[in-house]
Figure 1 (cartoon, helix red, strand yellow):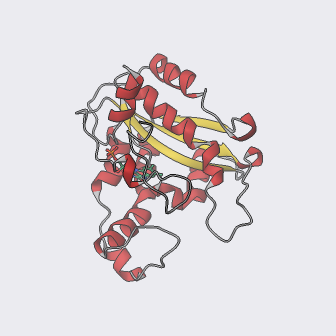
Figure 2 (spheres, rainbow, N blue to C red):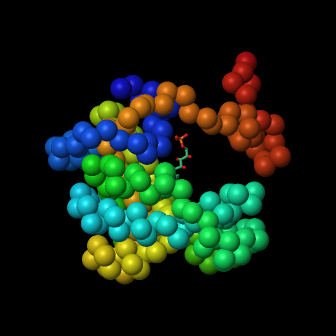
Figure 3 (tube, rainbow, N blue to C red):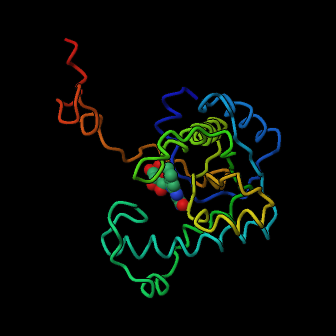
Length: 225
Ligand SMILES: Cc1cc2nc3c(=O)[nH]c(=O)nc-3n(C[C@H](O)[C@H](O)[C@H](O)COP(=O)(O)O)c2cc1C
């Protein structure tokens, strides 16, 4: 596929056919994804390829607590899991909210689930002393994660970055034998999509790109003229 077509159509795939992903294809996807950048080119990633049914069931189960909270906050009109506005949803409401099945089913349905970990010992977290949640660390792993999904799209497969189960990281680490200094960054169910979306809903450039300052004029296609 042409690069821009891949970028514009790599949707979040959560429903999969029964087709397997051969190891040779997985290898090709990872062999291309590995050219992603990372801080200092440290490449602290490690990918666990999960096909075992029991492990996939555990991944689904470990997603449930975060999925309940996600759904409860959404219902209350909040931006789920954000760290700026404290939630007004109480623990009991969260506990009583069912976890939507589209958050758990993909792990059971996909032929393979990739668990992407990153070695925090080699990640430069330059925002670690700021009084806000860290985001820079993610920049040393998510380009790689996204490259996996772009390569998968190119090969006719699809998947989704999922993160809900990561709220239970210590249990995940125990289950998969991941050392404590490796953060689990993404859990990607991967397979042949039941359907490929061709039109993704995204905001236009002029809604987010501005000249020179936060309150600058929006970037326009014709401003060079
Ligand atoms: C950081 C991040 C975390 C995400 N976590 C989940 C998740 O836990 N479960 C899930 O089903 N989708 C998850 N998604 C997928 C998003 O919901 C999806 O990318 C977004 O809705 C756009 O979907 P589309 O490409 O099909 O338009 C996540 C995406 C990102 C980038």
